Length: 423
Image (cartoon, rainbow, N blue to C red; front, side, top):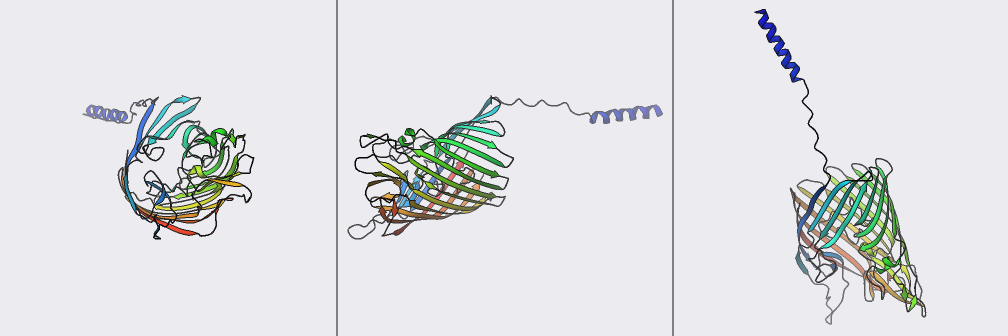
């Protein structure tokens, strides 16, 4: 009997020992040498406006309301309502990761939408947005190709439902560039960018061609910024310098005249599980390529070549939004001001190469306020939004591109609904 008990105890002990033996390690799946994924969204917007505005792509993107223009009966011809349905902002992109290069992780993005490149027949055609490759050495990264202007901060832009993403108040567009980012610590990074304007471009001077001002310039535009980033806070400041040459021949004379300008900008974001608060400000010359007010003036004295002076623009905005998973309201306010150029000559002939003019009238300032609600379910979102944009117009003073007398404020009320299915 004792022998049987001894055998039973030994058996239990052996089972217990076996149960504590670790299972054989499962070999990790080998990392893919190549990985390609497709992303994008299908989007449809319904838009209704109370007034005609300076606009892009059949009123999809509104800039500022047009000035008052009276007919023979004294009625304002621009006080006319408009509406439209559009799906041209639908987007398609491809992300790819490949083998390491010189010890750096590699990735690339190519992305396009159906917005077209100009009004008319191009609407609905593919438009390139991003096309770049990135090399990442952990603390240092190098990006080459077309992507956001360095003054556009992907983590800090207005969350408005309107496709304008705060355009006129927040820089927007893409440029072909070389960008070097260096992590100085876990939270602080420094970024340096050299780029050539692409989408969108500075105005073309007389006899010039698209992008000629950037192509003629030997020096690319230069941008530098410092950023501090934690889980809930993002802060950054930066500065930019650009020197463009609109023409190489002016009035049948060789020209080396440049448009030299600089700008400074700063931004901040606070975000937690419940709310996101974002703010941005920028001030500088010749910000036209960022789809903002301004540009530059051209001055000609008899017998000479055309010379240039940048016009200065100041802009800021604030966006407050809920981070609710199902329902997320949000509010936006933006303001931008045309500060004109520094030239006050009265003996020269002037031409204004800038955004915000119409004949003998010019925009002095624009402000916008909007409220939205995002209704979200899985990858689907419906966002109704109400928006009011006001612009103050005045008589154009050509020498310094500012608004003089006869100032008049006009406004446009926009109601829209955006429906987006992301994949």
